[in-house]
Length: 192
Length: 191
Image 1 (cartoon, each protein chain N blue to C red):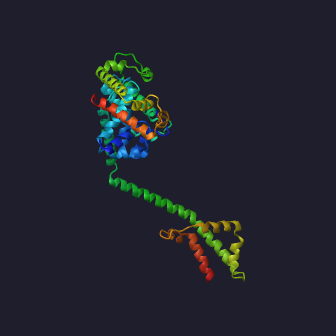
Image 2: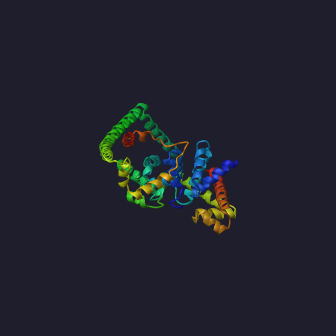
Image 3: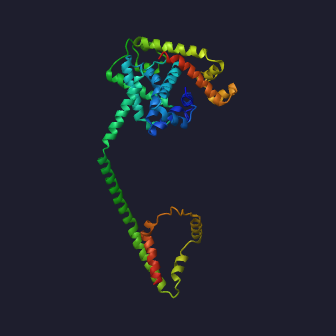
């Protein structure tokens, strides 16, 4: 999603490097759930997973000046998180609970919910509830908002591309997507 | 919702889609600490997007606070390590080293040049004074100069524009050995 040359992550990284720590806060908020999901494949305890995530983000901040932009920022952060998780597991000599999952398997498995199901059934329930609320909210959107939103989120079209599909100015596309998000946000806010 | 907040939230939505610009990011970050709704909306928008696109485990909001706290702590430690007297001592040492190096370089590079120039100048003056024509010194200079180089130099000088309100400093030029040598030659020539 987004081109490497002009993407939000790159802009935020540049802003952090110019001295603005709030920009890093935005990067954390943007990627924390994905990184947490990734790290959860290595350790089953939620507190340990959070510790590893924290360490991964701190390492990323410290070495941010070495990020050259050859790859996407998330890819670079992903590698740091994996290395941090691996080092943690090796130093503690632990294995994931109720599973013979090897480190390599944890790294490459996609959508492996085995650990999470065992360790965090409650959080999984919350996640499922939120997902349902989001999809229900999308169904209830007015047609023009739903179309703009789905073209963006599921087809990955840029605003410029969406203007061609929908035959409206880019400002209208931007506004429709925003209003769609606001309506969805209104539905999930009560659940958070 | 007031218009400014709505405008900010719309910018956040565009930022999520990589459709924002530097100015919008700067504007959002300016209000970031004052308006909590910006960071909270950004957090929820990203959560919703993560949930839409795959299996995501929701992390506690305390992670972000913990990261911030640790970064603040590290920055404070870095600031307190650089006490003023250390910084001052470092700067004085650096300035002294640079000054010594400059003096040595200047002495090494200009002294033989200056001495050589004086000797060459003296030879020329002696040659010139041994001749009858008072313009022989000028002629001696002219015959050794490249006409093309002179032309290029004149053209370059004619293109120079001097800001009368902020003219270039020339004190260091007047103190240079070459400038003093030329002065010496002129004063001897007048005599």
